[in-house]
Image 1 (cartoon, rainbow, N blue to C red):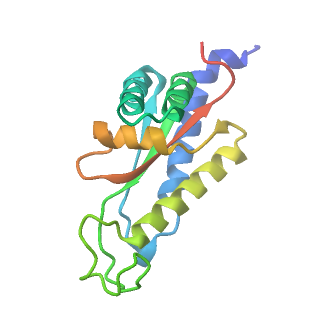
Image 2 (cartoon, rainbow, N blue to C red):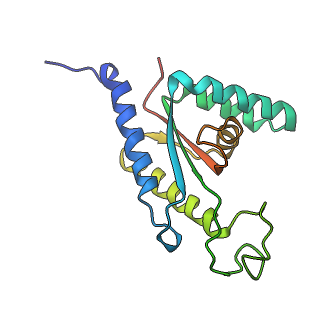
Length: 168
């Protein structure tokens, strides 16, 4: 039997996206508290995300959102990683305020930001291990946040589009 790579690409991308998502999930977290949310947007649903990115480009005049929307449409899957905002109660000052009580609620906890960053690093490292094309997009993450793709109140979302060859 001969199995052409193109014949199993869709199932391969799905498995790769799951492994990338798991790598993000299992990354170390501040105080051992898991406040991350992760999901996969399949190629069939990527257009909604790309359209929202184009709307943001029009509103804000950021042309790179248009370029990134094209990348989302070409990807076979998009991994999303974001966080529930939660104070860690460390009074560490990394957010710019001496104590957690002084920090305005609208400002994210720095530990939450670090957790998302470490998860993204872990996820794209797994993508590199598997030799798939990937990048980290703030633009698609913002669009995903506006669409509520990870749920209500989930913020600091970043998107990792992945691709194996040409999408057909």
